[in-house]
Every structure is written in structure tokens, then in C-alpha cells.
Amino acid sequence: MDRDQLIDLTRRALKLARDKTTDLMPTESTVAAETYTSAERHAQDVAMLMASPQLVGYVSELPRPGTYCTKTVMGRSILLTRAADSVVRAFENVCLHRQSRITDGCGAARRLACPYHSWSYDLTGNLVGVPGKEGFPETSSGTSRLTELPAAECAGFLWISLERDTTLDIPAFLGPLADELDSWGVGRWSPLGEKVLDCPINWKLAIDTFAENYHFATVHRTTFATIARSNCTVFDSFGPHHRLVFPLNGILDLDELPEEQWEPLQAMVVIYALHPNIVISCTVANGELFRVYPSDVPGRSITVHQNSTPLDLSDESTAAGAAAVFEYAHSTVRDEDYALVAGLQANLESGVREHLVFGRNEPGLQHRHTTWAEAIS
Image (tube, rainbow, N blue to C red; front, top):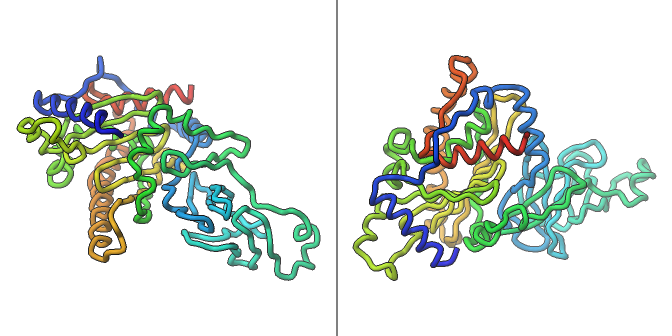
């Protein structure tokens, strides 16, 4: 994001903070409680995600030719590789023999060998080694390959489709956010690993927690609210996606400085909501990625939380500090947001009330749910 754009967003955020208000939608809206509980809606949601481009990680997880990483996406194990030609590819992480996972985690290798019977594959997906191949004359003598999925790298992130016959056009999917996300560079920063939350909340309820900061003053009184203002958000939509700007508590100090001395990234956090299930949080020192998936029932979801940093992790103290920041953010989401909304999920399933209310001051919530409803209609 260039400085002119950052300055414009800072002006808007500063005015909201000065006026003690937030960007507002024209009206309140309601969403049916069964949005989070019905088996029919759950099936529609799963189908929507299966048909949507899936952002699955940072390009820095495949930093050079000869590297690979694995991801779990909608319950499927996916192998991503960057072969000698530098092209990113994605495969079902399923051996052609007895369907074992071929590998786990991330690393560098010329070939990957299945841990069950050592069938091996190169990074372009070809079967290149079968111990005792006389037992498998048809398989070992042909051009057997892993099942490949469409894959792309765009805006610093890794993308796949779970549908084999789909053509991925991520720049078109992201629209103007493609260049904006790429300009942050967070997908090329050093990755800090993954943390997984398997929680008794609907996947949309999990994402709702990232769509507003109205709750900061109560839920995050001693954590995020000590850093960022509550109920103060700059909102912009980009088709099915949107951007939120959360002003930090010190933003009013900018009133004392000329604009040429402003450092916008010291005054705000920028949150991107990418349709249908991605949240990216960008600051000057962290690029957080949340991938949220429906589980096997409406009242359960899986959140994969990743973080990246521009800091030099070769320094031991710097690496420890970055890891501590990651754990702080993760534990706050786990112990404050998700712990609280587990109670909401129980109330929703009780059927006591038929709908929820989204306020004018919750534009991210309204936009997310409108977009989801349109996508399944």
C-alpha cells in the first residue's frame, strides 16, 4: 500500500477517533439463528467453500526450488511443491499405492517417499520409485502421477482449488486488493508456523469475531483494548471482500504532527476479509493469517492460524520475541474470542431466539453475511 493511500486511511481513522464514532451502515440488519445451526445451511456452506479459491499459506513457505509444504484444507491433505522450474504445484497428499499421506510438514527434497512402502515421487508429481516394482507391473511401468489440483501464487500467498477442472484467476478474484495485498509483502516474510483451533463454534461465528472491534472494550479489556480503540473502524468493500482499519489508541497524537511526519503503520491495524473464509491482519511487524473451515457438523469449526514477520529470525532473541507475539495473539483469540462465542453457539442451538442483530456500527459483519448469502443463493 503506497503512502498516499495509507495517509488517506489514516485521515479517515483519525477523524473517526476524534469524533468518537465509526463507519456506519444505513440500517441495522438481522441474521437467522439457523444460519449457524442448520444442517441444510451447513451443506450449502461446505459446497461454497469447495467451489471457492482457497488461500492456503505464504509464498515464503516455498522459498526456493526444491521445497515443499503440506496443508489440511476442508479435511483433505494437500501437498504443495516448488520444483526445479520454480512453478508452484498442488497435489492430493495421497500415495497411489495404499493412500497413505506421502509426507507432512515443510522442507526441502528432490524426492518424497511415502512412509508406508517407500513409493517415491518427484516434486512435479511423477511416481519415480517403487520398491519391488515387479509386483506392480502396470503401475510402475506407466506415467503414474499424483492427483494434481490447480495452484497459483498471487499477492504473496499460495492458492489452490479443491476442484480439479477449475482455472484459477486469483488477480480477477481479488480485484484491486491483489496489488494492495502484494504491496504489504507479508506473504514473503518469514513464516512462524501454524497453530490449530478445533472449537465448538460454527465457522461463520468464528469469522464474525474478526469482523468488528465493537467488542474490544469488554472481551479484550486487558489485551487488545490496551492497544486498539473499541467501536472505531474504517470500512471499505471490494466486491465479496472487505477491508477494516482499526485505529490504535495513540492515533490522536497525530493531531500534534504535520502529515509529512505521520507514520501510519504505527497508528493502525489493517484487517482484510477475503471471501469466503480468510482473515489477514497486517501491521508493521506481523502478517497474521486465519484460515477458517467448517467441520463435519454445523456447530464445529477448524481455524488454522499462521503468522509471518519481516524481522530477522536468525537472531535468537528476535525469533523468541516474534514467537511470543504470535502466542499472545493466538491465546487471546482462543481464550477470549472463541471461549466466549462457544456460549453463543450453545444459545443459538437452543432455539430461544430466532435471529441475531448486526448494528450499523458492524459493517464487516453485515458485509460478510450478505456476501455469503448471495454466494449460496
